[in-house]
Each structure stands twice: as structure tokens, then as C-alpha cells.
Image (cartoon, rainbow, N blue to C red; front, top):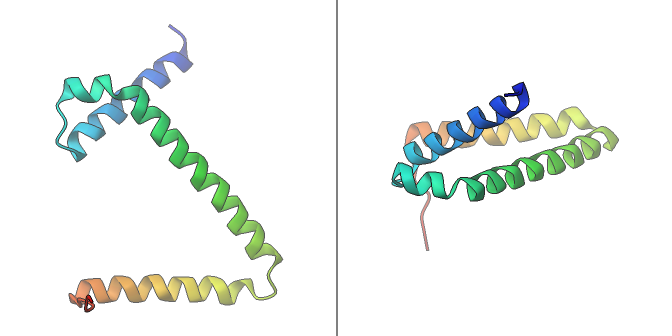
Length: 92
């Protein structure tokens, strides 16, 4: 068995075990859904890479990239702080 095939088998097995752990699926059902899980994870990874490259390219072309990064980190930090404090925003 080649190294690539072994690595792919381990990755799919880990994906199936992770799906069983996260969801309420049985192990047999998760094994049957393994092709769907692999395609879904691949699609999500592709979108993350695609939008990440677009974001980095846009950030490099901006005039004030440090300001945008600082603003984004401030927003994420504020969200984490409000979550840790237990603040619930009102719903309509």
C-alpha cells in the first residue's frame, strides 16, 4: 500500500469518527455518508482557500492594511469579550 493511499484512508477515517463524535449519527451511517463528508469538507476547504486568497490580495492592495487588520481584530475581540461577559443582544 502506498503512503498516499494510507494517508487518505487515515484522513477519511478521522473525518468519519469526527462526524460521529460531533453529530448524533451511528458509525455505520457515517461510514455510508463518507463520500458526502469528503466532498463537503473539500468544498469548504476550497472556499476557505479561495476567499482567503482574495482577502489577502485585497489587503495587500489597500492603502492602510494595518488599520483594517487592527479593526478586524478589535471587532473579534469585542465579540469574544461580550460573549465571556454573557451579554445577550435583544431579539425582535
